[in-house]
Structures are given as C-alpha cells and as structure tokens.
Amino acid sequence: MSASADIVRVDDLVKDVRPGFGLRKKRILDGISFRVREREIFGFIGPNGAGKTTTLKVLMGLIRATSGKASILGHDVSEVAFRRQIGFLPEQPYFYEYLTGREILRFYAKLSGVSPRSREGRVTELLELVGLSAAGNLRLRGYSKGMLQRIGIAQALVHDPQVVFLDEPMSGLDPVGRKEVRDIILRLRSEGKTVFMNTHILSDVEMVCDRVAIIVNGKIRYEGAIDEFLDAGEPEADLVFANLSAEAAARLEERFGARLRGHGERIELRIAEKDSSEVLRVALEASAEVISVTPHRVSLESIFLSTVNEADAEEDSR
Amino acid sequence: MIGRIWAIAVNTAREAIRNKLLYTFLFFALAMMLFGVVLATISYVERERMMQDFAFASIRLFSVAIAIFVGVGLIHKDIDRRTVYTILSKPLSRAEFLIGKFTGLILIIWLQVAIMALFFAGGSLLMGAPLGFTHLAALALTAVELALVVALATLFSSFTTPLLASFFSCGIWLAGHLSRDLRDYGANSSSALVRDGTAWMHRILPDLESFNLSIQASHQLPIAASDVWLPALYGAGYVAVILAFATLIFDQRDFR
Image 1 (cartoon, chains in turn green, blue):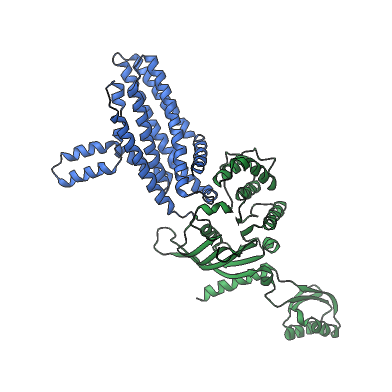
Image 2 (cartoon, rainbow over the protein chains, first blue to last red):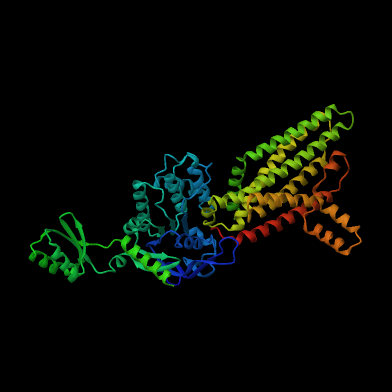
C-alpha cells in the first residue's frame, strides 16, 4: 500500500447509467473521492438515492465505474484474490432459504477459502457472536428479518477479514439488536479491523464512527472526523426564561440574533454561547426569571440536513 | 479454484433438486416409458424396438425440457434475489461462479438420465430386448447433448429473463436438430447465397443430430468408436465455447 494509512482509496469515481432503453445517461456518482484509514469506523452517509449503495457496489466489484479509480488494501477493486481480506454485508441480504444458518456459513467459509480444519470452529464462533447459536440448525426460511441480518453479518466475518463493508447494518433490527450490532462493530475496531458503514441512521453514526463522508446527489459534500464535523459551527446555548416581557424578548432578538420559542409563560432563546452572559444580564435587568441555561450541542442530524438542503439548493440554482 | 467451483456446484445441485419442475418432467418421462412398454406389449411386430424407441425419445425429450426449464432460472434467481452480491464479494471470479452453476445443474441432469436409464434397462430386460454397447453409447451421447443444452441455458440465463432464455434455448435446440437437414436441403439449391448461407448456419449452430445414436441402438446397427468419441469431443468443445462466451457476457454485467 502506498499510503499505509489508507485502506480504501476512491478517486474521481464516476458512474453513469442509462435508465431503460433511452440514450440519455443519468449520473449516479459525480467524481467522488474519499479515503478510509486503517482501524477506523468510517460512516458513509447520505439520503436515499444519493449514491451510497452504488459506491459500495463499485467497491465490491458488482458494478463497474464509468471512470475514476477505486482500490482496497492497494488492490484495484476489479481484482478477485484480495477479496479474501474483505467482508461484505449487502442491504437487506437474501440467502438460500433451504440451508440452515450453520450450512450457509459453511458455504461462505468454503468460498472464502477458510481451511476445512478451522471451518467448523469458525462457524460456531460466528453463530455465537451474532447470537444465533440456538438457531444454527434451523433453515433460513424460518428466520426473521433481524435474524437474517445477523446471519448476513456472520457471513461477512466468517473468514476473519481485515476490512468489513456494511450496507445499512442496523436495518431491520430492534433496539436491542442495533445495540448488539454496534457492539460488534466496535469490537471489530478493537481487533484492528477497518469498518466501512453505509447508513442513514445518524444516531448510530454518532455513536460508533470515527470519520464520515456525506454524499448528496452523487457528490461528496463533507469528509472528515465526526467531532470536527459536529464542532464545525459556532457553539450555541439554550436559555429558558419566565416572565420575560415581549418588549425585552424583541430587544434580545434584535441585539443578539436570538431565536425565540414560546412554551406557555416560558420563552426559550437559542443564542451564540459567547453572548450568554450579556443576554442573562439584559434579561435579569428586565426582571425575567432564569429557568435554565444549557449549552446546545449541534446534532449530526441538523448538520446533515443543512448539508443536504444546501446541496439541493445548489442543484436547483443551476 | 476447484474447491470454490465445487462449493457453487453442490449448492446449485441442492437448489435444483428442490425444483418441482424436475420431478414433474421426470415423472412424465417415466410414465411415457411405461406407456411404451404397455404399447409394445400389445403390439404384434417389433415389440423390443418399439419399446426402446419410445424410451429413447422420452429420455431425450424430457431431459432437454429439464435442462432448459430448470437451467434458465438458476443464475437469474441468484441475480434477482441478490444472493449473487454476497457470493461475488468473496474471492470467487464470475467465471468460477458460472462454471459452478453449470456443473451443479449438469450433475443433476445426468443423475436423472441415470434414473431413466435404469428404468430403460429394466423395461428392456422385461421385454427381453437386447442391451449392449450401442445403447450405452447412445445414452452417453445424450448426456453430452444435455451438457450442451445446459450450457446454452446458462448462456442465455446470464443476460436475460428466464422466459426469453427458455425461448432462445428451445429455438437453438430445435435449429440444432434441423441444421444438418437445412444444410443438405440448401446444398441442392441453385442459389449460391442459399447454399453458402445454410452451410454457414450448419457450421455455427450445434449439430445436435450428431449426438443421436438412438436409431442405431434400437435397430442393433453396428457403430464405430469414432461415432462416439468424435461427437463427444465436438460437444465438449462446443460447451467450452458457449461457457467462455457466457463468462464474457456475465463479466460485463452490472448488478444494480
């Protein structure tokens, strides 16, 4: 690998498709570039139809890019042999339903080149990891959606890959299942693996990802550490007052650019954190009663939504 | 590589064996063979030949039906249900996947030919009909023809829907059986275009009549070793070309 830290390298990737039999092309990926570093959990997020799954399919060699380069562990994604070192969970996976959980893992272990000596042990270990030990001998036909998702995760890990690609890994799971999958992902990182995760469940991204890339309309809008992303804006604070006169509220709105929200007799103001002392002084002078002062942490969701809105506005203005 | 192909083949065989169409066609084939025995029993002349003609026709016709109608769905099903996503993300080339699918299905088709052959042998013994090397050779060449038909089904299944793939496969199978007649008919034409055209069609289309030794078998006619190994070699070569072509097409496919 040229840059040892880069496990996945994507450069100027373009994917055009022709919907139906028409001659007009539709651009799904518009020159995207990003890097995934060693031993990190990378969140690839974006709204539906943004190009997340297409990117993942290019990385898995399931579709070919129109132009650009993509490599994993220094190997071009069109190569086959290096796939021994990667695992993949597709979105809403489907497996041969006439096989049992144990048989399907055995099948994928064989395809991945797991030696016959260690195969059974590995299958048992994986069934345990995803909480399906008791259901290992049941046919997949009888599995629930959540159980299929778990067996999907197990098949992605059965050959102990170095890099794991997960497309919507929490999909179809209940809160307990989601927590368990999050724990598996965190465990993978602690074992030195790299995880690439496609998702639109932002709370999960906030909880497990080290870095993220946001893709909107086939373009990367942001790539970087999640903390930097969350801290990108000016810190804000929420102040709640009682008995704040309408006149004083209007004055605060005008002077500090406060955003007001009324809750009965209480008024909530969102202001820049640096103005907190001054706002408090003005409000107390106006005989208002302070109920609470809370620093406001910008959620990934709000930044994500504003990124998507900006991208949409840009598209509309063209 | 062999291990991966074998894993796909075994799984394909397990999948094919669950297909109800297989049992339906097998049932009808055995029923037709039984009908042949009954018909031969009430016949006054050439009972043995009648029974064996009936049996050979049943084996060929119903095995081809199984090969086409089970074969065309196998790859399409994997793409449609997206099982291909997890399989091809493993260190397995698309060629290995395709060859594994072909191998799995041909194993099942040959197994059912073996079952029909046992039935055929039982009927022949019952009727006191002769059994010999020619019968074995005829069945072996039927097996080669079936490999070719499965390869065709695999080819069409790699890029189109099961319905179209079955139309194409049936069409080529029919044309393959008529290509020799077409060439002979064209050779008598006064037009050079027709003569050359039919000759080229015969060269391109599989000459499936070259695998047909049923008349020699039921009439106890002598055959030379080259009547078996030459068509077998031709069939193997044709299968290799079709599979190479299928791989080429399958390799270019986007799984969207």
